[in-house]
Amino acid sequence: MTDSVPILEVASLGVRYGATEVLHDVSFSVDRGELIGVIGPNGAGKSTLFKAICGLVNHTGVVEVNGVHCHDRTDRMDLAYIPQRNDSDLNFPITVGELVLAGRRRFRHWWGRPTAADRAIASEALEKVLLPGVESRGLGELSGGQLQRAYLARALAQQASVVLLDESLSGVDQPTTAELFDVFAALAAEGTTLLVATHDLALARRRFGRCLAINGTLRADGTPSEVLSPDVLDSTFGSAGHRAVAP
Amino acid sequence: MQWLLDPFRAEFMQRAFIAAIIIGVVAPVVGTWVVLRRMANLGDAMSHGTLAGVGLAYAAGVNVLFGAMGAGLLIAALLLVFSSNRRLGQETVITVLGTAFFALGVVVISRLDTGVELTHFLFGRVLTVQWSDIWLNLALGGVAVLVVLLLFGELRLATFDHVQAEQVGVRVELVQAVLVLLLAVVVVISLRAVGTIMAVTMLVTPAATARLLAHNLRQMTVLGVVFGVSEGVVGLILAYHLSSAPGATIGLVAAGVFAVVFALTLPRRMPHHHRPLD
Image (spheres, each protein chain N blue to C red):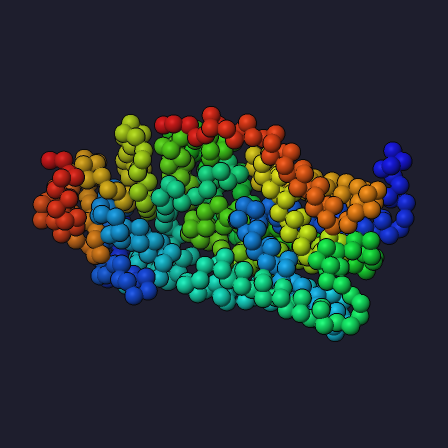
């Protein structure tokens, strides 16, 4: 496998929920180490796009990861998906260490147990997201920002080439968001590809090297200044988009 | 001391205690996952629904435990089939199946001309437990505990975050199907001792009590077993001295322990223990 092969290739992807077409004809490719913002209004299909890429919903079209055509979920274990923060039960009796170790499951059979090497990788992942030594803490003991970092550590322990973060920054305060973006940038520099869904257009302008505008289909794909242009914002958000983005 | 030891002297009481201990171990081991997955209503429907198999087996002269197991498997299979219909929530399907099978059981038993009473199955007759029942319960319960131990990691992943679990290769639907089958096993081994109604009590209450105290899953499972066994034994001792229905007495003891633990742990759940701010 050469570096010229995109790490993620999406071609003519479409998703229907019953009679409703949520996404159609979405095509783009992503290289290793890119940090990409996925923008669009509520209901635009950002979460559906991520779920389709991960094989969690039925779709038409093609998803290739590292040049391999994906047929089912087991082909897509090189992708990590971090859903919106309120999707999980935070009172569940699981420690942060156990949460991060969940990422290692792809490397063993169902009857296997985490090894010492798995635990070392999990601890290293927590250190990378600036959350060292919290393995024995319960999830309920973490703040919102720390929790997002713990989920990110799980994705790192999974050693996924592509990490999809779905509105993971919603409700996280500005200093924590800045810290998380520093972590994203460091990961991207090491070769991990990150796609981050966000409503925050000002953030998208400042922190991403590339943006995808989604609303039912791919409206635009380019640098933040190209994607956050008045025409694209009109087609993606309607007139509200102009007010939401900082110059 | 004499008061405590008296109930153990008769052989039928010894068998009853062994039956209660088996249920006290197996039900919370499975019940831990029933509580965490918020599937208590499925346990309720399964425990009621197995009455259909019990009634039919009794009518056919077959061991009622086999009838209960058959009904449990059929409910599990039908649940998987009907749950694929997205117009109906799983809660609805569970209720329809549970009540339908329960109604069938009541109709069949009410038409039997053998003097058998519905209450025998609903509330159990722990004093009539035979050694053959105990061996069967030991075998079924042993398999159930072994399956939970083997699947512990998969159950944890599938229960906490089924989306991520699928993403890393866990067969989430298969795990769910196995859990439903284990639920049927618990109902079957509880049948003779505490009856179909109380089966769900032993499945849910000790595990729920443990949930209030435990910080992790292993603690929750072990505490659930400690509660399940001790509540079964204490309930039987009380039933012996009070001449009360054993299954219902065990259920009341379990509910009483839950209430006490709930009250004692109330301060821990007060607002100042909520999530730290960023």
